[in-house]
Length: 398
Image 1 (cartoon, rainbow, N blue to C red):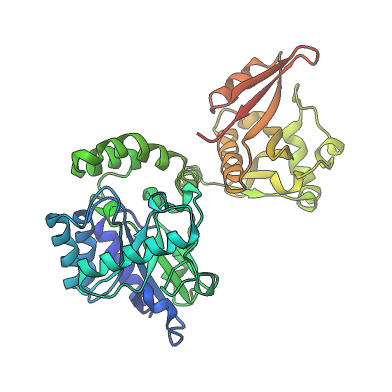
Image 2 (cartoon, rainbow, N blue to C red):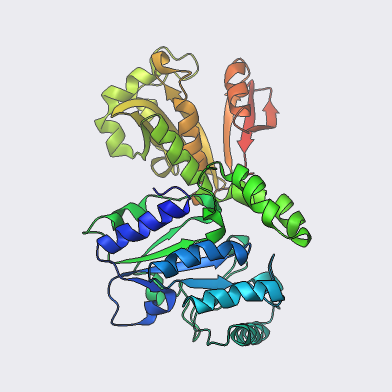
């Protein structure tokens, strides 16, 4: 996957061009003649000034992207200096869209549309051009998006969104590797590529929080510092795309991969699984326990491989909308090598992606090392059960 530098971004665009993808603004999604293409979407969330380097790079390559502008954000295009940067984007030939923030909209649906129309009109007056496309800011806040199917081209309108591949660099992270298929001539037909221009300013800093603290925050106006120092780091830590990116990176570093497993797979690989439980004092499972059916088990269980060899396995279920861990185990000769930690992170990501209310498990009182291990992975004590000589631990997404 591309690193977050201007050079890597240029190489990505050149690769897409080499594979004969037309590179187009978002409004082209609505063109019935466009059957194949990459649609460049840029959400300008932090700074108009920080958006200019990528915009200039694209313009030098003869490309046109769509830059979605906030009217109520950390920057204000109404101010003279910010407006100058906005005008520069227009002069480069880029498409300007409205990035609306539902936190600033009324609850009444009719009033919401009126507010949207007012903001579109204001942005048109600032740019001197028509606004034909809109997109929502920070959908993860859960406000809902009532404007996907209005008269403006919306990149998430099901009419188009359901027939393309969507790739985002949110929080300076790639959620998956879908982008790589477009680096082949036989890749999918349509890609909606969302990039945030402020994330590509310095490729030398790879840690996202270091980048936020040392590259972005010093560039932000004083009146926005509290937002960037208090809210943004928390968003970047809990974002599902960031969690998926970090897990994939860790897996790659250890040449590992985690796969979901079902009952048929488990039966077929029983000869590899049973040795993991051999000589386990706390999980003396045999084939009967391994294959026992409980609600959600075959949608929540995973196996971890290193270079094709089974290293660890986890069997789980669903209780009260939570993932419930029954077993995470690796072969005794392979313990303390990080396999269990990788598998647990895969379970945590799975719980986030499926909207679970966290993860729970029971730990025996005479297994303090397991209790300590889970606490080291951000599990906390929920309750003690003296009658069963065990405790209940729980993880909730931070």
